[in-house]
Length: 132
Image (tube, rainbow, N blue to C red; front, side, top):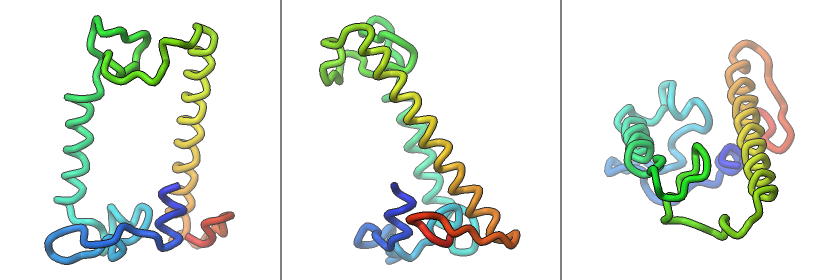
């Protein structure tokens, strides 16, 4: 969805940094992280550090806090009724979530491949997005 929204020209308003660069002054897709007009390394570094912080401090399994399976990050702090489901429903919802995640990964991989083959002479005309 982020690819479709930004390629449609919808960006956050305001500036992304104190130098006055607006959010729409940077290119879409892979060009945003590599190339002449890419986001500066300090910006990419901030994103990587934030993800690292989440991995180390927030999204971790805390033993003894009701984690039912690997990747259950509720840690007795966030529950939207999961405990009210029976085991069959829980298993079904986990399978649906895994399959949706796999589909999203394949979708973004397809977009990245199409974006990288344009310089090789193949201009992909994708539904909804159009030419990359």
